[in-house]
Length: 79
Image (tube, rainbow, N blue to C red; front, side, top):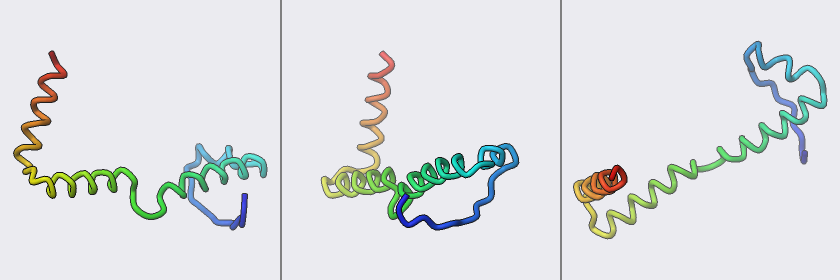
């Protein structure tokens, strides 16, 4: 890990034994670092929804038209 910083985070009692030894804490710390990286900035899924919504509005699509398309797609998927 680069630039390791020691922090304290609360965990439930069932998780505590997994953090007992230094090697386990290091592996879990690497996992926490990777997960935390995902939450920096905008949520990627929210960003996709926002861009899609903006593109649909620019194309002149209304919520009613989108709902109708979704309903048609769902009906098609069931048959």
